[in-house]
Image (cartoon, rainbow, N blue to C red; front, side):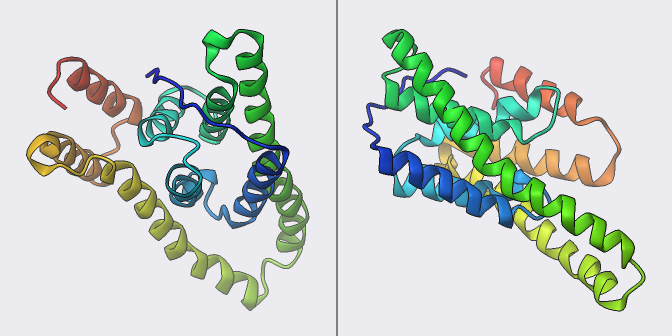
Length: 203
């Protein structure tokens, strides 16, 4: 899943903007960091041109296939932004340094506000869990989380928007969604099947 780095130049203001934007996303990450992927894609790929669609999608795919929390895709996104700013791994220490800076900026920005808010809100919510407004909030936020997850899936799939060429990917996406919905098969089997089909050139 390696992609050639973009040649971009990032100023101190750009790094600060990246940090504050991820801090904002952190407070909107209801249902997990993955629900903010559409906004990340808009900011990093469409608006700032700091990542390609392929780099963004592969960051999420690799993090989802690896063990551990899915928030790791944020670190991979930051890694790729840093690589693009540092000239790639071929640039030596500069490339590695910028890549690690990208990881630190995006991960701290994503984790710090939500972790702090969750710590205090969870304690308050547990103490007041029987209050009607608290129960109403928990029930009302569920459809928002589902909509955000559907939006994330749409963004990841819509990057391949040539029906004549990409119809196998769309078919695989639909079949995978139905299997996840109707069965309890482990997601790693589906990821493995997708990887096998991709390796065979069938998707």
